[in-house]
Image (tube, rainbow, N blue to C red; front, top):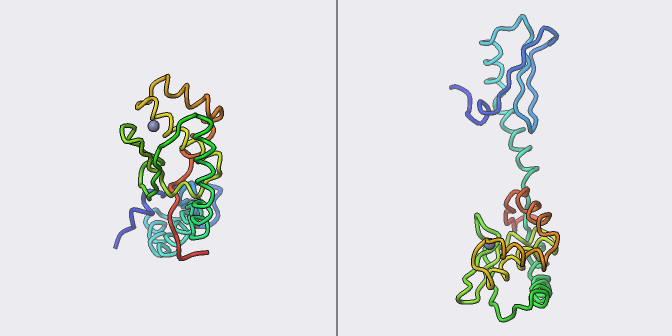
Length: 184
Ligand SMILES: [Zn+2]
């Protein structure tokens, strides 16, 4: 049957004299296989194979813990607060008349068409605090002045959102939130 690549990719073999019994530990760092000196590799791998269902279950439990969900109420709350956020950013930057649209996107938090004064925001932003959403809105508004990521552009972003580096970091380090209207 062979081992699933999900397990093989994570497998770390630990063989030390001090290990007393054959065991497996699943953590976010990997699947650790502890082999005592008297146990052969073949027997140890057969042991992993025998327990593969249990290992896979624990890997998926660990993965689930790292997911961020947007539930229906989180999304409703976002739609209630977003207009206030946009108004605040517009008056901060002194840029008005931009049309905002919302949709789920896979790889970007926001996008814009400066020529049409149009901005699209990722609904996944619903999972974040106002300060993070404000940074994204300011970022897109500043593209109305600079349709690029030049020094001047980042200078404008910093002027209206002084801690933008922090908010960018939050977004970079977060998994993409997933819409789960079925849970609450
Ligand atoms: Zn940009």
